[in-house]
Length: 113
Length: 116
Image 1 (cartoon, rainbow over the protein chains, first blue to last red):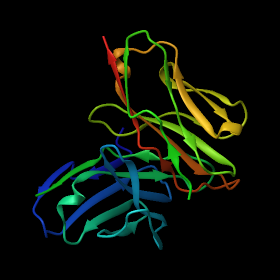
Image 2: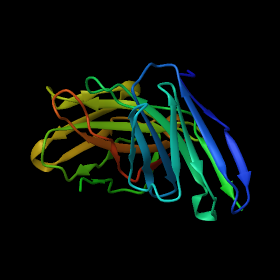
Image 3: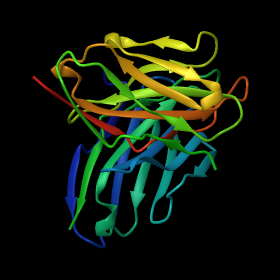
């Protein structure tokens, strides 16, 4: 199911480069999230957005920025990539009303050399 | 701060063995509880969830979990595992404000390897 689409799926880049990861959703959900997954650490929240005008830092926002261009689009940027940002990045969505669990994209595997 | 603990980092079982994965959380208020599964190379998928009511929750693929409020636990169980259950399992918790939810806090995950 392609309700939450992430691009690119894989990216290899060099230290110091600016990287943008994009996420779009067709679920009509208000909330969107960016997580990173590292082996043995589970998922950690980077940024989240309740709507287009509401952006919030998560647990590990340093070194990252986000843009909520529309209800359906939420992009994550690494302004100057560093090797310890090598990870698997997931975008997720949830409905603001009620207690809906989050729906995840397929992930972006980012490697910074 | 709220936290979620998964006690086992890696569990290895033979097919047909029974499974129980532990999960404890630290928050004292009303919570929603989730178990997610991540098959190799795939994104997270919801296995089951608890919001309220019967503390024994049944999910997909024969999994179930029991919420024990007094122990702050939400352990995942399956009577007989299959090789296809090989995956990483994540427990997650968020605060229930009665009409909206807080952000999910994930445990660090438990890798399950099932030997054929």
